[in-house]
Length: 201
Image 1 (cartoon, rainbow, N blue to C red):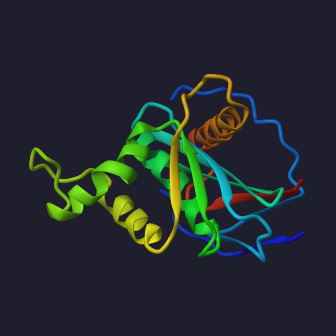
Image 2 (cartoon, rainbow, N blue to C red):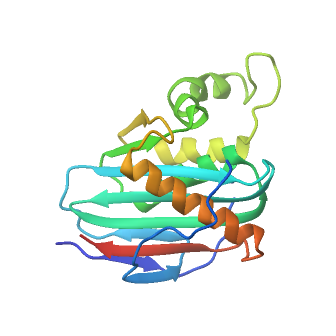
């Protein structure tokens, strides 16, 4: 089975009430990374669950992405001391897409209608209007939408909405991880880094 590895560099991280208890997981490997690559994937798709959290909105926030390929799992988390919930929801999706090799189909599950509808319905119209909404106002988080737009080129991505806090195990896990990162951000744990958990099934 393919093993995963991380390109160990640093980068700037861009953002719902939350639990103050840390999420329960046992990482086999943890590091700080801007990019995560999975060698020689043995599955025909990457299954991803993402979530973002923010205390105050705006306020300290965190994000998480749980990626499964061929039975192997990668968990990417990050935080920002001053951000918004939508930014963290978007950043979770962006970091997840970056982590998957080109050519591998992706299925992204998110409880954010903003992310799902933005990626599947609104993005094309925003671009055609010069990154303006139907009311003529500038698109919020344009930098992130432009980044996501570039990442989506040449990829097969299926976007699926998942109802939040409805008992879906992977969505709940991503929620706990994102909220814990928001707590860490509020406690002054730092901004410009992403923690990566790598574990094998």
